[in-house]
Length: 80
Image (cartoon, rainbow, N blue to C red; front, side, top):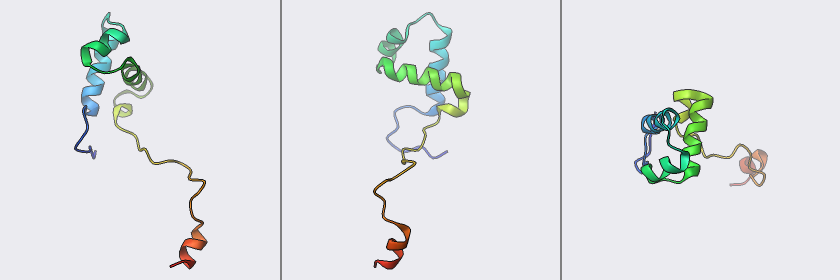
């Protein structure tokens, strides 16, 4: 797996934290305070882990699936 140099948490650490939140009596807000992140981030970790386990904790691509303003392939070949 290719992890960029500015990542704050590795997928393994996100997984550990999601498991900790699921197995504890902490609310997501309390866990967010403990880990110094937002409750939204904690929710994301927990949902990812519930849906896909360890594999889902890896960063996903941020490349868009569709680019409506992308240059047509034929034009890109014709134009220098």
